[in-house]
Image (tube, rainbow, N blue to C red; front, side, top):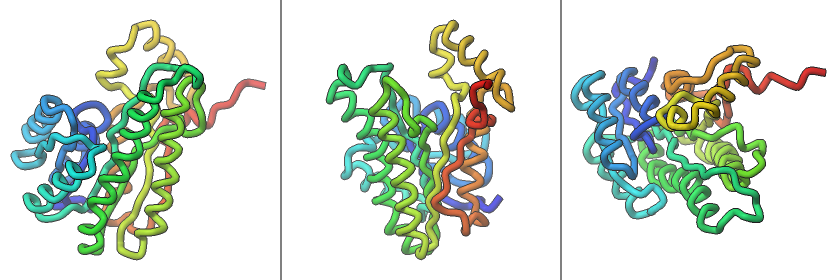
Length: 256
């Protein structure tokens, strides 16, 4: 794939999908900068990637992705250290437990919306001048099928809907500069977070996946492959697109 030698930033790559994406990019020949607020998780992810794909494949940057100055400084440091920034994967995201809208706190709204969309704005804002200067860039934003609406999670759904609109607008604005912007919405994925949920909840999810065309949960490798497709140098005529990586779950409807 046309990724060898490229420099990528992956946000929220200390664990889960982000870590899988970072590893996939490194495996395809990119040098990866991990942006995560969790210093220990980011360091562990970088160490694992370097052990698997070779020393220098990954580096760790600890920062608050909702703080403009911190994001700008981290992006500048990546460019100074690695020479460029070619690929940005905006994966960082948070969610709270189900809460009806009348009980949803302003604090939870601000935390979820701020992390899930403001962070993508700040990182995209910071990398764009560098990508424009190079005449090349790949921005891949991670959304969720929850953008269609989920009861009890209006803040999360709103933030993911904003990600999709944000991606489309970036594609329109940046296409003439050789920069594409696309979006990936993962299904439920086997991650440490999923495995930490009660067994009864896991069993319920597994039962539901048996009804979809590909009867299994997603893996971080499944999500990484979709990101790699959009990140490839040869994907230069694909922009503003949104792909749902869900084993065909979106094809299912209730039985008549």
